[in-house]
Length: 146
Image (cartoon, rainbow, N blue to C red; front, side, top):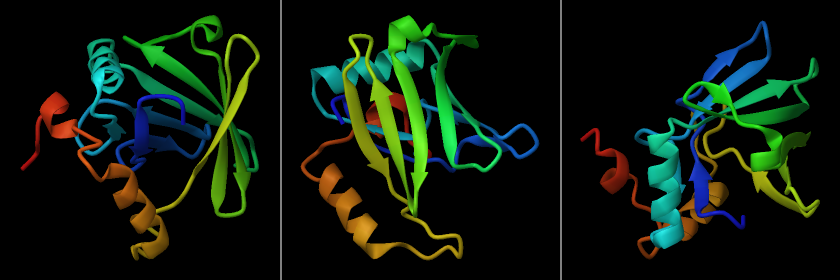
């Protein structure tokens, strides 16, 4: 991922099964992780300041979604953000970004917690490795629930 984030938690989002719409909040505890560097701090503070969130609009089969960014409740123009898509590939999702210059970038979303509540230990290991070495700082930016 070329951006200043590594991990995202979907449990704080809002799902509407009738419209196949998922709203994902970027700010708040346990939502997002950011790199512990200037780019990460700047991105975290700016997304908090503009109350940014992502809205996922899924197709009828729940296999593809277009993602739109919102700030202060208004949709951001694609020209400012690029185009975001998600395509289901087995147990993972291919998250594609098409930048304004036409460059494409892919990364993959993996499930950490299984539907039965058990933890996928292999994905957990990847997550812990991504966050090791002071890579994230959510409590400093948004505060802690504990």
